[in-house]
Image: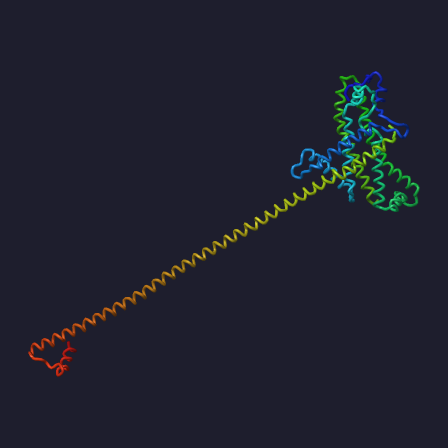
Length: 262
Length: 156
């Protein structure tokens, strides 16, 4: 988000600059292409979460909580409240799942606040031309990995709560009754498929757009950049948190819908 | 931009993270928070109970104090009564003793008086006999005049 330090001066060729910054660090061909940057930063943020979470959980103190423990307790309490308000069944998975989603998405989104040219700059120092993205949530693979997981859980909870027959009946008879069965199936399919698609696309779109705006700001003359990038970064803190929160809440809501009879 | 094998890697990361958070973070933290909530609730309940007990105890305390005061005043009244009785008793027994001693003394005095009178009478009789002897200058036959002498003695 600050001036570009890459070998290329942004304003010389804006299209190429943006294309380079939106390209992933790739290995492989066709479907078997691996976005190493996405996997690396996804794993790094996950690892950071695990280490911090384990550190806090190991040194729990009911009487004298440390700062980090209080912070984590705050989030746990918050997630727990949301789950209890929306989800009326009992499942040991939902709350930890919601917590994981919230924290991981938040952390991955927060990578957006690092300068867009940081990786290219480090690559330059090492003498490599590095095209990589630091924000895993600007990659559809990450958002859809989570969205598909949630979708699988929706199907699992639906079948668990209503049985295969009950779930099938919902497909056939709702919302228009048994005389419009084909329409019902199409409607229900769209309804169910819209859930993971909207989950994944919403997060991806927001983060991708945010990243793009940072890139556009980086194209401007250096003396204008702070005037724009600072407010955008500050506003982005809200978006980061909000998107993590929305993903978590929608997950809870979808799963509780799956759990309940229609 | 397009979906490819990366999604597999992200799925694996995601599920490992969920498993880890579920097992090692969420579990301990929530159970600790539950335990703390329970402890706080217990503490509050104990405090409430303690307050109640204190109230009861203070009530009982005042009652005991009241009873004790009542008893003390009873004992005091009893003691006063007893003291009065003892004093009365003492007075009465003192009177009796005094009467007794008085009568004893009177009897003794009377006896003494009587004895003295007897002595005196004997002496006067002796003196009279001696006087008569002297007057008559002759021995009086004590046996012959015993009746006479006795009558004189009794007249004295």
